[in-house]
Image 1 (cartoon, rainbow, N blue to C red):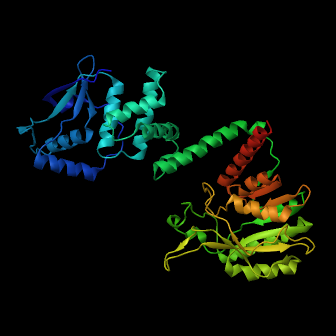
Image 2: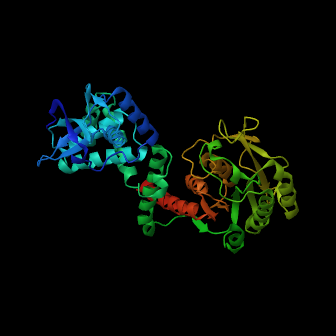
Image 3: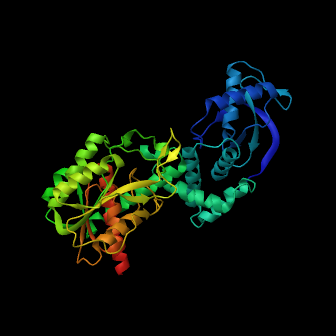
Length: 447
């Protein structure tokens, strides 16, 4: 690769400079205005870099912000200097690199952007992806490590090859989904990469869906309409209904998951839904079934008394789930809600839990990536299922508010058959894909 650069600086008419598609798509107008004022006051410190093609045409390699600033100065008829020399009207100074290599130009441009004002994450992802694909197309034997070492070298050692290799890997995946509004609109590259990963997983799962049969059952729809039509009878219920605390108004910045509650969560809706779950689940329960229901303190007494009237034997006081150092922060008081309440009930006092349970349960809520604002940790569900189903033959569990499918992960770990119901179409898709992945994983384990 010829990277020999001339050491002379010359002037060229702006109209003669070709500007190919650039890595930087987003240009901060305020910062551009500051650069323009700096050049007008102190002169241009570094000339843009141009390259010549085989026909002698000049194209920009690095320095688009400086070129734009100089054009704006010419448009305003504001004189400015370079190397103590007045820049001619409608011209710019430049350094001419003799390389006609597109890869070299692209790498130089990337280095220029990395060393100076940071690209937006979208532009940075595109740049790394384009560079890697171009290098690989020209020399298929090049590894990602080879490309990363070359990019790192051109930054003067400021960035390590290992870091660049990791960034290229993430960029190649994320760039494939940049046309997706959800990915492109992510506030950070990390969130975009996570979304792209999930979307790729969804595509993979959809392609295999015809081949997979799950031992679990997922139903998309309103659980209040579906439960009584179920043919099965269930030994355990885990229900995580709305709490009636108007969670849809919570600011996402207060949630470690950065997700918004999108369901209606008024107290009136919550108490009505909770009661409906209690009586409908009773109708599909086995004679010694257990039921666990998450609820807020304001609803506990009402739901407990209602369940007792239905014939459930309800533990008098709530169980406390200690979540650890996570939870919603009450901004006015600067207090973090580090626990949630659980109601436990039995259809028959003849069958209690499989072991003694302390009424304060400590399970960290940090057990993986959270995709639902009210998502509970798999470890917690596993504990509840184990306590309620150990010793039962082929137990079955129902989760009528299954969200993103935590119940399926927990049931799979304990080899229990689970049925989940979810109304939200986005999380319904997540649940279906979860079932496919779990079935594929089970097949792999069997092999």
